[in-house]
Structures are given as structure tokens and as C-alpha cells.
Length: 332
Image (cartoon, rainbow, N blue to C red; front, top):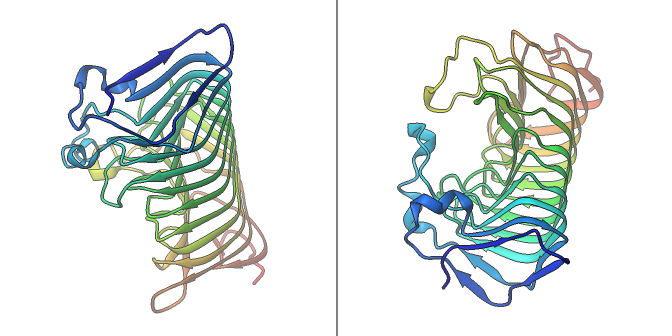
């Protein structure tokens, strides 16, 4: 068992942190320092974290008290691993277990690879995003198995040139860009690729979410392709009216401009009848949305359908359910 660890550079040479066995976090947290994370790495160039070990956040006692989504107030709970201003580095062959908050929080990093990662927490663990990336460039996530109570992967503002592939997700809330537009001065999101992933029994599949009444912002060059959905609610979702628990001015449109988005070769089953939902801002309709070779069937009675607003996607290949059929020609 170990308390809060901060390993901070700059360092004169590359650093390897090798974990064998299991580190256990205290069940009670120092609230004043929680936002720095339980095990934190900061300002290091050339870091390698490996060894096959487990970071056990022992978060079960904390989840019940974490009601930030419902109250709008953030309870100070630590992420299992926090990487801040870490460059030219790799995290591989480790497990994050039962984090109190996000499992891995990646902020202000450049050229960082996460490979052969296992993330595990129960479905009812609140706000336990598997890997959260914000204000970082050149982050690669590959070959990860994520089971958690929130987004398997979430990409916040300033995420640029992010590649996610060979990820299995479920349970969880899917792979999300956003939410965007909650705060002033958010940085653009650009160059996101999510491919060759499998999602099973998740609350969402691949989604982009922005708040109504938001400051101006942008998300562009977003690619979702070669993805299998197994009994996923909301497999394909753009939601520019994201307003959990009614904590926003829902009548005002989002001012996040979403453009150059593609959904290609996405197939499987939907747990809800609306398998494709693209609801864009009436103030800034989505631009250059492509839907190609999509086949999603509904697991219940009736056929899967799509729901669209403020978007005219280009539809090609075989697409089911017909996506925004009134706005585009779907070849079935």
C-alpha cells in the first residue's frame, strides 16, 4: 500500500518505472492533493512505465460519494495514473483497477503511446473514465481492454492527432469526443481516428457530445471506422444538446462547429431502436459528415432507425438504417 506519489522532472536521462505485483491506494484520500492523481508523472521526456503490475485504486468506497454529474460539483478524487507534460514516452503492459475517478488522465502530453493496457472497474463505478486525454498531441492508444463505469476513452478539448485502435470496450459509456463547450477558452479538437475496435453492452458506441449555450469552439477531422457494436445503445451518436441532469441552458444552441466527420464500416447490433442519431446545432449545423457501409440492426421488435437534425450527410455504400434519408440518398 502506498500513498500519493509524484515523480516530477525534468530528468537528465530517460526514466523507466517498472511495476511488478500490485500497488494499493489508501481508501481515504487527501482531498487537497487529489487532483494531482494518486500516482503522477510530470515533466518527463522519455518515460517508460511497464512491468505487468496492477495499480489498484480501491475506489469502491469513493464511488457512492462522487455525484459530480448530478450536482455539478466536483468531488476531489484522484485518478489512478496522471500524466502531465510527459513527452516521447510509452505506457505498456500494466493494469489499472478500481480507480476512484479516471483511471488514466493524460494532460499536456506529446508523442505518448499506451499499449497492452487493461482497465477494470464495475459498471456502477461513477466517473471512472478509462483513458481521458486533454490538450495533448500525438497520443496513440492500441491493444487495450477497458471495462469501466464511464467512457472507455474520452477525448477533451485540445486533443489533436489522437489514434485509438484495437480497443475492446464494455461495460462502459463507449468512446467519446467531449463533452465540449462547457468552459471558456477550450482548445480545438482535431485529427481523431478510432478504428478496429469492439464495443459490447455499452451505453453508447462512438459519439461526439457538446453542450448547448457553449462558447465558440471546433471539432474537425474525426474518423470512426471498422468498428463492431454488440448490443450497444446509441451506436453512432453526435449530440450537440448534451445536457445531463438538465444543468444547462438547453434552449440556446451549441457554438461548437463540428466538421469533416466520417463513420465507415460500422456493424453489429443496437440495444435501442435509434441506432444512428446525429443531432447537430441549429446555430452551426454539422458540415462534411460522411456515412459509408453501416449495418446496424435493432435487438428488439421492429427495425433500427436513424434520427438527424441540422445535418446533410453524404451517404455511400450499403447503409442500414438509412441515415437521414430525407437529406441524402442511401444505397441499400
